[in-house]
Image 1 (tube, rainbow, N blue to C red):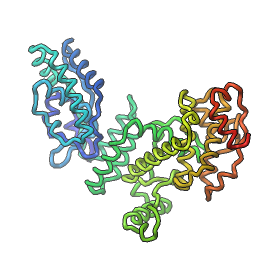
Image 2 (tube, helix red, strand yellow):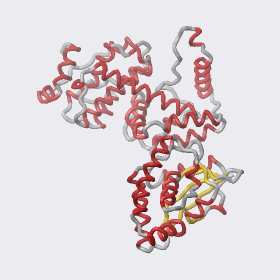
Image 3 (spheres, helix red, strand yellow):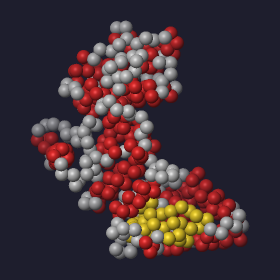
Image 4 (cartoon, helix red, strand yellow):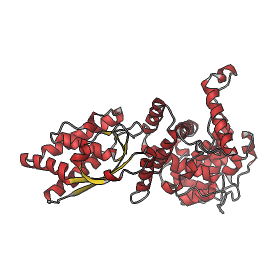
Length: 433
């Protein structure tokens, strides 16, 4: 089971679109922007006008099933846009457009149809026919076909680790989908739809600015530079791993899932058990997607709690340094709530973690990601040196232990006292400074 060599070729767009292409359930929604669709039109139209004999449209990776169906593993966005464009040029028998799309995809298709239809109507009658013929017969694509879904994903990963870097969460998605081979198809579709309905920029932000730093800081490691080369922290324990530590964590996950599913929480008059901890490895496959959704929702709750607890000027957002400090504060609350529960974020806990976070803002005239990284690891020489907050929280057995951490009074210059008057007043009031 591997690459199908006799189907590895440079093929005309017409020939590629005539094979039995299909969109597998794990594909993300169609989401090409108006700008990207218009750029595709401009690039191909200019190639047509300039008489370029062959215009290469990149590559596609396909997984061929025994039934003869070709699942699109990579290239769905581009092929769907080309199908829309050809439809606008009068070729209304586009198979891909007859696939079942989500509402999110349908909205994007309708929007891009409007744009590309307008561009097609700008063509003269002669250009209309010749440009469509150019697209079908002189625009080519590198076709890569495997008879193994896993092989297709591995090729997808390797292709996207070179050149333009794929978003880390997309690489994680393909990795964990490969661990879901034994899952029920309906459950797989439900999980993937929940994941894909999340804003992709928010997903990147969640991993880059919260989950990755937190999984590193409590171990005293660097929390900067999250990229596709640093996704190992989220690959988790594979299903085939049978070492003691792996069996323990897999058994723990199964127990929690069964406890929550069979109503044991009602019998014991308790809440649903929390399945995830940032200090523990996750289990590869479907649980990665649940892990991501869990922390996305927890972060939203943290942010809402901050908005309820503070006046707007107590959490400044004007400068980039202000945003970094606010994210540090959110990280500290997220990590604490992850360990002890959301209800543990009492007034005194909020006050302590706010004081710790914003002492850095009052101390520094300029705050950069490197500033945050040093401070989070207790290595900032200007304030609270040696206080490794996340490591300290990870070792606590009771939320009351946070009160035992004694914060250093920041050395604040007059400029910051005025610039961050509300922050300065609040921290001094809470800490008796």
